[in-house]
Amino acid sequence: MLRPLASSLPLGFFAFGTGSVLLSAVQLRWVPLAQTRPVTLLVLVFVVPLELLSGVFAFLARDSGAACALSVLGCAWAGTALVTLTGPPGRPSAGLAVFLLSVAPLMLVLSAAAIPGKPLFAALLLMGACRFALTGAYEAGGAAAWRTASGWIGVALAVFALYGGLALLLEETTQRTVLPLGRRGRARTSLQGDLGHQLDHAEREAGVRRQL
Image (cartoon, rainbow, N blue to C red; front, side):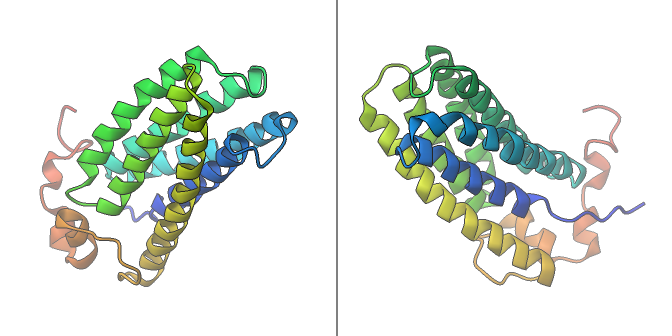
C-alpha cells in the first residue's frame, strides 16, 4: 500500500526562519525587554507546533534524518521559550545554558548525517548549532558580544531558511528542482528516480522489518 504525503520540510524551514527572527529581535534589542515574554509566547504557539508537526510527518514519509532534526528543533524551541517566559526578562539562565550547550553537539551530529544527501539542510543545522553554542555561552555568564553574535547568526539563518523553504516548496509543487538545493545520493534519486528507486531496500526499513 502506498501512502503519498506532502513534504513537511518547507513548513519546517519557514517555522525555523520565523523563530530565528523572533529570537534575534530579543537578542539584538530590536524590541524592548518588556516585550520579551510576548515574543517568546509567539515562539511557543507558532514555531514549536509547526516544527513538531513537520517532524511527525517527516517520520511518516520515512525520512528519519529530517524527522529527528525537526523534532529536536521543535523541542529545543519549546524548552528555550518556556525558560525565557518564566524567568526575569533579559537575565541569563545557567540552566538554559546547560541545555543549549548540550543541544549544540547534537545539532552538529544531525548536520553531519545530513551532508551526504541534503547539504543545504546540513548547513542550516550547522548554523543552528553555532547559534545554540553562542547563546549558551552568553547564558552561562559570557559577554554581551556572544548574545549579539548569536542574534546576527539568527538573522542569517532566517534568510537561509526562507530560501530553503521556497526552494523546497517550488520543488514539491513542480516535482522538479527550480532553485538549487544541492541534493545528492539517495536524496537526488528520490526526486529524479522512478518507482523502483523509491521501493529499493524498503524491506529493511523501520515499519517493515520486525525490529527497529
